[in-house]
Length: 239
Image (cartoon, rainbow, N blue to C red):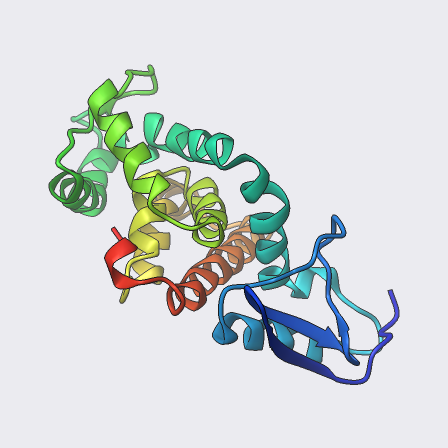
């Protein structure tokens, strides 16, 4: 698509903020008014549009895509979105470890156990740890508490969480990433632990490294999006 505007700006309207391209309000990809909760996010969206060259690169609009996802997908079916996110807690990758006598197990304990323990203390839950890949269900009480924590978040934060948790295959990492002051690089290292282990063991491949870098940029964009959304969310509603 060719660039069809000269100036991108943000305008406050009833219910939030909108991006304007030469005075025309941007809509979501499904054709809905793209209204975001605060100026910080609107300004970041403006920056994405302003950075486009003569041809629009859809891959360079990750914040736009997350805003659209919140409006077009999360809002019409919050319950379904929360259920999907809870699923990442049911099969959280941090719970599935190598056998205790394998060297990888010690590394998993070092990087994963602190994250799980922090989550358990925060939400007063217990996660089952498993050696191997055979599924072991988490307790109903744990899943109910995670669902309660998810339900406290707004649609835009849930959109960020969906990307963060899916890329990490871990709801624990996703929730940790939206905390103020989260160490995003350390969380990504935990999410990619097994792939990094294999690369260190057998050697790195250019294609795999390129894919990992691309995934990290998506992870970082979702983290940035959650930070921008947080500016509009009352502190009392953040778990």
